[in-house]
Image (cartoon, rainbow, N blue to C red; front, side, top):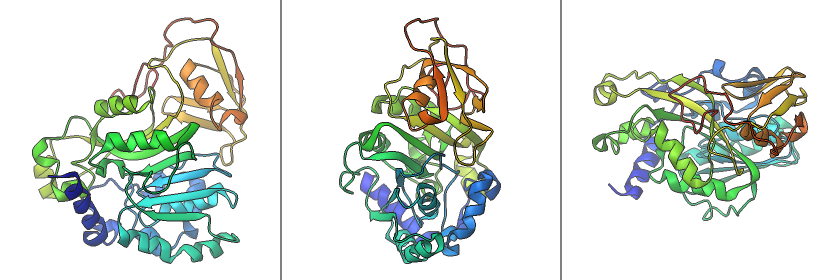
Length: 346
């Protein structure tokens, strides 16, 4: 099957087959309680039709977005894009890219409604019909984006390596990729990879975690961090019969456009969170094993230090140390050994 046929099948599934999230055959879509409380309250200001056509599997909306330019890959009906619209504020910008005209029609229909709801003078959201594999074709230039987000979409692409390369191209130095997606504990058999239902349900396109790690490293990111992870239950008996031997997880990943090492090295560096990010007065969770409490110094590896010092998060931390003295590998490990990670610390 050609890549174009795969894209057409996905477009048909999300544009014609699915009419609401209740039509899905898996438990990949995140529940409301999986979303931070401050975002749950903002969902009330998102149009009901936009929410009904949401098919994401997580809550990939990082903090500290005021004034940022954020790119939402596979924005669909615009739920996350409109949440981001409020988070970036009137001086920020949100760009949503999707290939499904029916989904974008829903998003655009309610664009002015959200302007009025948020009290903005004009919309700070642009919706572009296009392919996430070809962001240049969408008019998105090199190093023009502060943050890239995506919600259970990258698995649908037949050219995932190209997607990650495009993401790294458009991100500014120090920019962040923050996305949720479905991952598998093994490679999907070729006989199932093009099944239109399994593909549309985000199963047959799910990346094996180790292949994801290698793919992102090839794109230029040596250290991706798992923020959260949860199992994806299968509800449909026909789906279970086909692919029930594979374990799927919904995982939220954080990565940066930074020159990081492929292992976590110890330089004796210290980071102290100042408690200044909006809605995060007590702690900031960089990943599933780095919870930086306000005012409490934490010894961190060189990569973690750079993730804080070389990004928009720097002003929210007191950072001490350099890389003049090396003490060997940093004693750090992820809480979930099945998570897609590179090195000892991620």
